[in-house]
Image 1 (cartoon, helix red, strand yellow):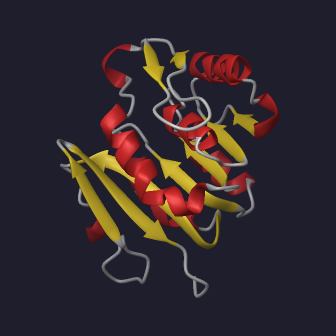
Image 2 (cartoon, helix red, strand yellow):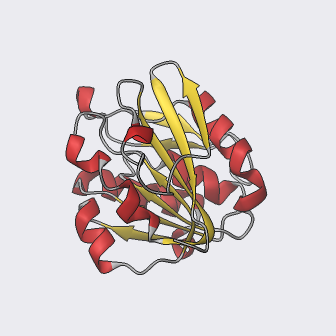
Length: 186
């Protein structure tokens, strides 16, 4: 399977990832384009994370558009190997960090420091949906957490009793993107 970098320094470059059947669901180009345009003012020199990276398309897109670093968190060793190969193809291995671990382990072993986090867990793993609030503590003040999920899941319902709620929600067919901002008060 292959995907294309849409804009920026690596515009038009083709990268590869293993095709892993129905469980593998890379973010569509039009969704990536829209998300990156929304966060464009925050991308320059940003430290980013692509959690549940899969193809790494969002992480590489953010690097292409000016992010200083992208950390890729992927549990599947085969996918992580492709992420490393693609970083080498683009010549950005010095701007990438790779973590072959599950989300819980990453959260528990990492201190907050990200300007932008893209979180795209498998749609059918319910337990990963409830980690949004924990992931928010990895953000710098005024950092942005972008959460991709299916239309069937209403993430805003989890946070009805606390301040951490999406400030923007976008719909792309059956895909929903929630944007959260970490305020100084959290």
